[in-house]
Length: 439
Image 1: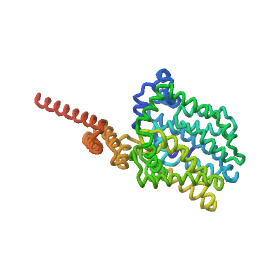
Image 2 (image 1 turned 90 degrees about the vertical axis):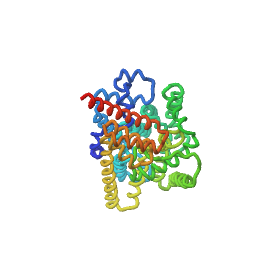
Image 3 (image 1 turned 120 degrees about the horizontal axis):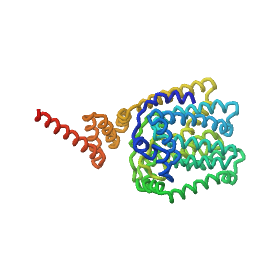
Image 4 (image 1 turned 45 degrees about the vertical axis):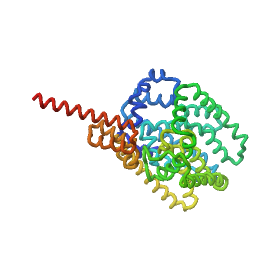
């Protein structure tokens, strides 16, 4: 937990970014508990309640960042507790489980892809959901089925992605030597009833079915499934490997099969197949792979989202690769060199996280690095132009708007923003001329 705080401390001065303005700063529903209550029943009620508490106590971005860091540090500790209990079920000696659980938690904490769920304030939805998700698993492992189901409700009130919990619990049940499908399914019945309640809420609560309607109108389900092959491939080969971190990546919508999609899809299916195949031979490898793909289902599978992929989609799933890396080094390398290799990797991940936090220091800084990473995405250039415009950097803002329109002539937001900028400049020129004539 201390390592987590140290890695994210330089993110405290970060500004409000992108969705933060609509979700928090300009949203009166999270500026008081009375206003919040008036919006109920609504989506993500528990998440919004934490925004209200933040706003009432300390509305400065620093206050929000402190809470986000505390949530991530708590999740790191929960990962440690969870893996202490799961590693002995993966053919890991009890004497080594504590040390390996510690390093898995460190990898989870320090991976730079986590910054989008921690340093980006609106990313709290995923990290706060994860807190209740991990607690629900720990309660399940203690045979406290009802408490686990209640914690699932809390997780869903932070983010709907928690619907994957029953699948994760079945995965964990499968680690038990005495595993039986009938017994495992009985243990997740309370969670399945909670998901049935969620389905009813989606139909009855207007904000939920509007959210579902917006999702279904984004693109067809077929196009979304094709696009998500690219989305999952991007997440694995870019942010998971730490090669590229990008708040607005260029992942195109795909509407028909192509050879590259066939190749990528085959690799993804092979990874899932390896997870199933290795479930009894190397349960740590099977668990790591299947945990990862189960948690991509929530964001990168059937239901369309505006963005094909985001770094924060990896938040929960990262536990799987962290387990694979740490246990693989433990199994294949002698103790001293393995520990050294893990420590070096942890330092490298932490350093990358510190560097990424610095990108969130200002809005201009974040969108400048995003424009470098996504140079052909119109929305990125429009967002860069907008924050430059707000900062009074008119020449650079105009250039960014023009690039956005050149990349996508139908980007009406960029057209409106450029028109507004030009109107302001014309008004300034008129006032200047009148002042000269008057003198």
